Length: 159
Image (cartoon, rainbow, N blue to C red):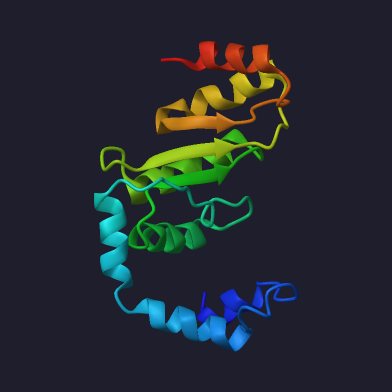
């Protein structure tokens, strides 16, 4: 995304007394200098980790994932969240691509999120064939209030 595109997503209604869109673009331009060194410093100091979902949205083609994942790695991300829930066969392909790009033993982590679409047995059945891709966690495999259900999913999927 270009600096101008980033700035277009900002709602300036309540901050124009502090900065304008043109000033924000200029600030981003100025901060580009030294960015690689700052990112390296963040990695060395084990700053708070954040994940990236940009390559993991449902409906993205395999080709798009193969372009976005390496870009995310270059940008310093090593936690990746993929949305799941269409079909096990499709998720196996997507998770295979992700693991092919980010690897298993490079400190890169996959997480999956199904947005609460499953029942407890459904989550277990759906995720069991995906366990080989070693997702770190399943975000909201069922209703967020289903605490005992989450525990049952974890217990059933532990290797």
